[in-house]
Length: 332
Image 1: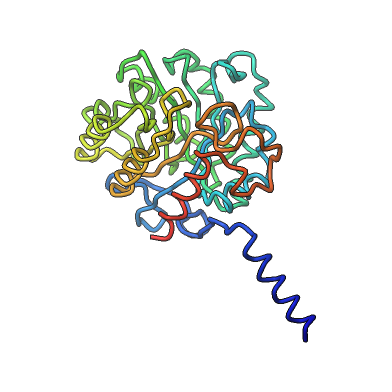
Image 2 (image 1 turned 90 degrees about the vertical axis):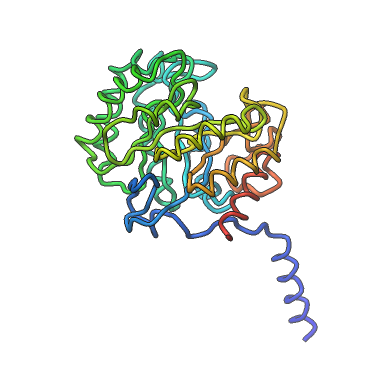
């Protein structure tokens, strides 16, 4: 009897020491299927609204150690994310660019691995053509045409894929972005006709108001809004509200709880205000970034040596905030 009691007490102690999973089964490919955009909202195959909450990698070329089934299990079950963003830098800036000397075959395969690992862990995946320091998406449009033609052929039967065709256009007018989109969107739709596509907006994807005044004429489109809570506050939300009121479908494919540099300071209170605003308007959101780089936006502690088997204490302030936020929102 004493032995049974001891075993029982040990089991209770073990359960209390094991971090609780943030995983929930809502708004996942297994339950919502292929996504669509209906009446300004991201919706499941049933036409009912969906909210995706997740995180982005720091850049595919420097994230290979995290692009495994085991790590994606942690992203899905420990963080609780139902979407993961694969950021493919086009131009080298501290990371190898796909269009500037990167190993295209290796990088492409990592993207496809991410699609499959996300699917096996019941997550949607965003395939992000990560325009940044190159500014104008038309600069490497031939590479973009080849990339999206190839990857949309590969992904046409995968119902967990979202295409993001230009991350943060900058120093370029909306008309130039539209011209680029008018080339890339038909290429994707020729192979994957019912796909959801996200289009970047001017000024590092902050000016959704400009897009709202002159939207593209395609179904199943979303428009990108990015923010960092220590830098972008009510004025930025007012811009977003203008676009929302005009019926523009928005997706926050990148945000941070830090300054726009990706570094200190944190502003967790303002981040909460932003999330309240997004959730109230049915807008999905993806945090930057799943890495251990020496930036406060990194979700993993720089001291963490693990690539998988992650626990709550392995995450930074940003990462723990994300886990707590997703858990809280998923339970509502």
